Image (tube, rainbow, N blue to C red; front, side, top):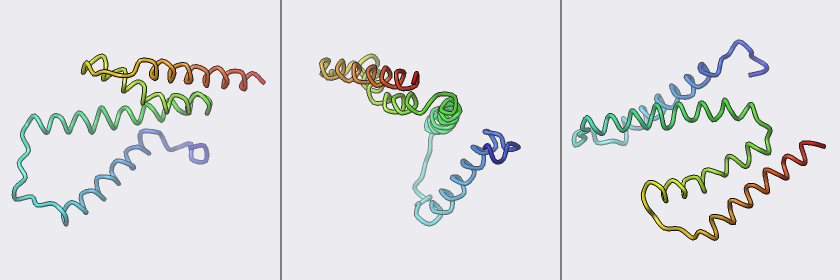
Length: 122
């Protein structure tokens, strides 16, 4: 991006997704039995949601934000997806967990952020 300032983030991501569609399309022509394939409207909506919002927009925003923080914070936040997923499963799905391990993991993440802040001050 620095070497080619005329390229914008959205253009680069458009090329990435277009390439993925082409490669996936070519391989699916040879490996998929389309005769028995029946996709309902609800399934199309789920695919559109997962493709555009959950994957496309979220991945774009993550990469855009990753360039605005230092590498230590980025490393910690990249690994935060695991405890965030556990917390979401507790809140939304009502699943059970080991609270001691979840709390200990949270303390380790907070400690990593503190260590990173101290190192950045030097």
